[in-house]
Amino acid sequence: MSAKDCGNHGMKRKKLIKRICSAILLFVILVLFAILLVWLILRPTKPQFTLQDVTVYQFNVTSPNYLTSSIQVTVQSRNPNDRIGIYYDKMDIYATYRDQQITLPTLLLQTYEGHKDINVWSPFIYGNSVPIAPYLAASLNQDESSGYILIHVKIYGKLRWKVGTWVSDHYRINVNCPAFIRFGNQASGITVSAGIKYQLSQPCSTDI
Image 1: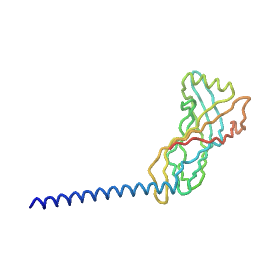
Image 2: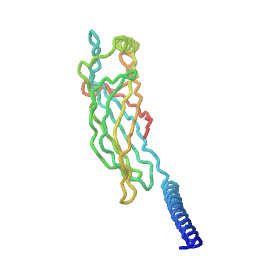
Image 3: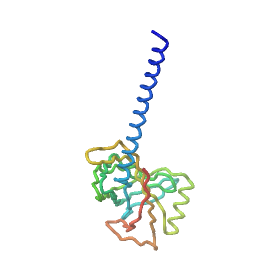
Image 4: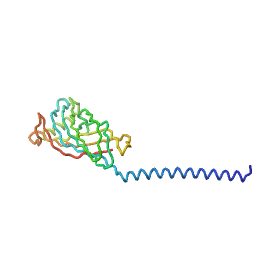
């Protein structure tokens, strides 16, 4: 084989590699363009959560530093998307006070939320003699004496998006709902079966 033939063979190989690289680059560009196009058409928006009401049946601090609570909450979720459905899979709801969890997690029922649909959950969250830090016990006693307390109702779990017949992988969802509750003479709630119900309609923050 002459040097000329070897040179032609090398040039053909370089052209082939260049064409393969160009094809791969074009494929990647088309995939990215398709993803961008789907996003522009669908404009996915995270669900909107609202804490509608809180019913407090028990909320007591006992010595040395224990908290017993029994609370029913009503949480509404709304899917604002026109073309995207949402599967809510494993979702736990619980309450915190100053970043410390004060109730056991309660599992919400799995459900599917269609386009522009609304779901409502009304679970009980409770904790029996939950140990809390000494400074939190002092803060709770002070807040209750003042007639008000701020707790946060939180939801942590997984969801999946549904577009047509396609269903995505799981995404983590964190929902945080502040609940400002008044006690004692300043109570503004409604007595319901030995509990006090507070109408809140409080928007929640949602991270996905």
